Length: 381
Image (cartoon, helix red, strand yellow):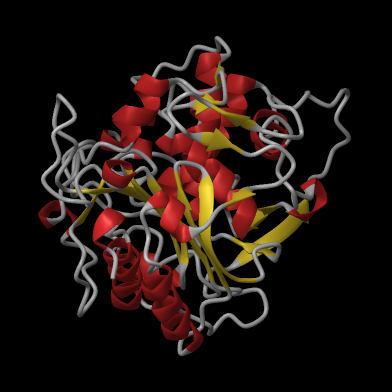
């Protein structure tokens, strides 16, 4: 089961605080309002996404319309299919802003990558103790040695209560695994990684979201005041609850699949991004949470889910899922990248409107397969 899908839902118990601050000066967008198209046909949006016919990017319009009919029978609120930066399919209200759940963790990965490219030094081997991440619940001896990298990989071995009832019921016994040994999807890890970002970068995580991503990439629907820090009871750590539209989630995905490029500018450190989406934990290693009926072979990297077959050197591909990676959030929040096809799929369910709304993991895999089946190049009939 993909990370983020079981958790970050409405059962979490948080106290919410709005931490909006006024920026001293607004960073300039990286591209002109018209956007940019390179010599290979890749495009990055300016103020608006570039819409093209499905056939121009090798898709069957008829098969995509069959997908549209399928989506109408489920609780998808919006979706986009993007090929080389061109929008070939839209469904629902892509302007709708709602909570993205665990997609926030992949957003954090991009913040680290942007700050690294800007010159800020992050030592992934620093321990939680060195970073000052001790919570109100003190670390036991083994936990003190967990590193920032292990937090991002969900391998910290720190099993402190996260405020999520589902997670806490399944959490291993404290001290049962040394850091790095065992994969366990624990929001304590990811919240601590967000707090570490603030300590190292000396800025609020949502100010960084605005200044490193929203403004430079020309997010269309971003509202700094909607972002929330939700503090867990008896904890100094917080959930950085993030609220984005589908079309702005898509800009995050385009930056990731472009290896940190935005037009002519290398905006995010590509080595860190490539390492983040490499499956350091394979599907079998994620035996804590495998949903009944889940058909995907998603492993885990650093703050991203990653298909367990990585990309081979030399641009050799054995299938569309090879090298795929995804941001995955509760109830149907996804940004999924298929580097083999230069393809992004972005999907949203509005859990703010109704926390019970959901598109299941097996259903989402069916959606992905329908998108891939529509990619028929010259063989479309």
